[in-house]
Length: 156
Image 1 (spheres, rainbow, N blue to C red):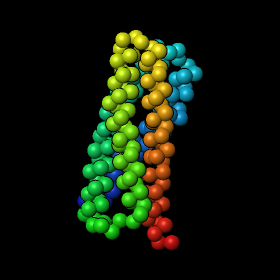
Image 2 (spheres, helix red, strand yellow; image 1 turned 90 degrees about the horizontal axis):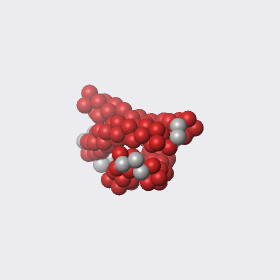
Image 3 (spheres, one colour; image 1 turned 30 degrees about the vertical axis):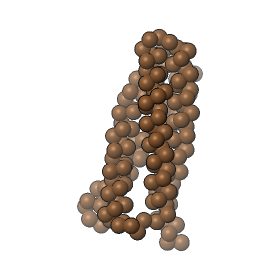
Image 4 (cartoon, one colour; image 1 turned 90 degrees about the vertical axis):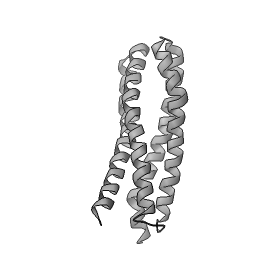
């Protein structure tokens, strides 16, 4: 394996850890703890700050995932990708669309509602964002499983 291929696979995995791991942490640990400990205004302000920071990392992860993934698919694999790679790419396309939707519609509305002190509207939008991130989390875990197990299933 050349250095370029190893680097592409490593960066691809790193971007996956950032995006999927961040969703897992936020969905399974941060959100429930914030809901237990904070009333609506401070909780919504906290989540606005979390999303602002995390979503910047997600954009970077998406660029890195698609860039490295397509390069791996086209260069080292050169059309010899197993079914797990096609599955991963299909799920990645759905995940990317869900994230873009989150960012363009409910997140922008959420940010605006928090900035304007409209806590009821912010709460509704946060609920939608939470559900969509939950969907992306499940899809991301399936994709990570396919990426880890897929090459080994081909040998079976």
